Image (cartoon, rainbow, N blue to C red):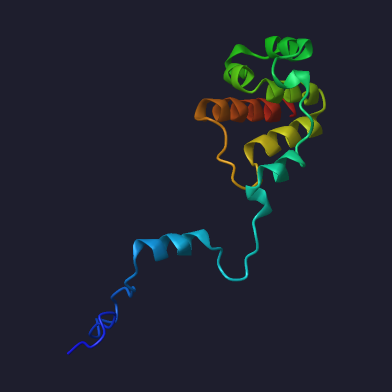
Length: 141
């Protein structure tokens, strides 16, 4: 006979264990950080604001050198979607393109971002960047 409503008869060894709780307790548990973990500074918007570089006018539109660089590329590898959605990236690529090691570093950073909580580029933009990397490697031979 079960005396306490929270006690259950023994279960199979492969069964999942759980405890009965009410919704309020469950919500409170989700609001608390696990033991040993302090507040996450990355969750605070001010944390990132203090680490980002200052916005520049070239972040919002393609520069003249970037447009010239785009036109110099073979049409099949021109990153047009990237230029529309992320002009600052095309500006950075155009600036780095004349120096192969710098070009490779910029492409590597774009394609293999190690910053936390990043989901990456949209598929079409990623494909353009990958095509540029292939073109860069062929150009570097």
